[in-house]
Image 1: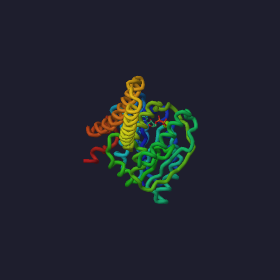
Image 2 (image 1 turned 135 degrees about the vertical axis):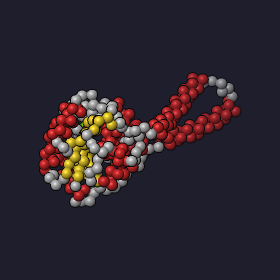
Image 3 (image 1 turned 180 degrees about the vertical axis):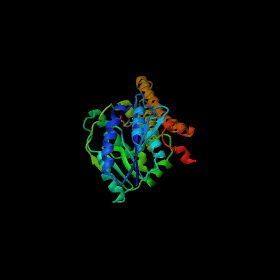
Image 4 (image 1 turned 90 degrees about the vertical axis):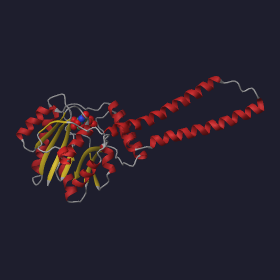
Length: 317
Ligand code: UDP
Ligand code: MG
């Protein structure tokens, strides 16, 4: 059995050594598995690539792919999947927030229990700002309501998958990738493991609140068309309210006369409607923008440097 571990790295020079050491222990424990560590350097601005090269020189199991710039974690995951040829593939963060010690148990679940993938979720969010946890929880709740992709609260990208599962993910060559949704969308039998949140071993998080917020909007646009329906629904509601108001005004005019008053309320109504219209156009626009990006069919990542003999693109030819 060959197991490829995909590790997206963006400015992780401080954490990589810890990660490698920790993996070393697990690899020794799992003697019967042939490991490959596939580091993806996502355009780091520090010495991450140098560290990767050092590791690759010491250990033939270490492979790296270096991007020409920062393409984001989703692109790094895709590059990893495309270039992994193991029977099993796992995605893990470089900061040890995805504990490698879970790997034997995950491996066991696929090989002996017959699952297609083993996913992990953290049961608490210790060490995370409360406001972020609040938004994250509600995002998951909303997402599960409005889309078919079933996304579990606290789910990590840390997941061990068999070949059919990886191939299914690669089938989806979309440009706007939202892995947490894709994992759920492809189906298959997945076992969930839970663990307590671990704080990152070194370096700092790359996700600001704003980045996470934009990412969540991407997720919604990628996996649900519900916002479009809401826009249409708002339009219908407004029409009904307006029709009722017209009837009311006509009746009042006939009964009491003199309806030429109340222009401040008129201004409010116009502004309110203008706002709703802009909102709906905005919603429409965000779907159009995503379609635009998708239609251009730009590559998801550009590889500048690698020590892999076969690149994913060759394999696709
Ligand atoms: N990462 C990446 N590209 C990016 C941002 C992050 O490859 O543009 C990697 C990062 O190096 C780490 C993983 O994605 O291995 C998760 O990032 P981080 O730990 O900063 O996120 P958090 O765990 O705080 O959500
Ligand atoms: Mg992290």
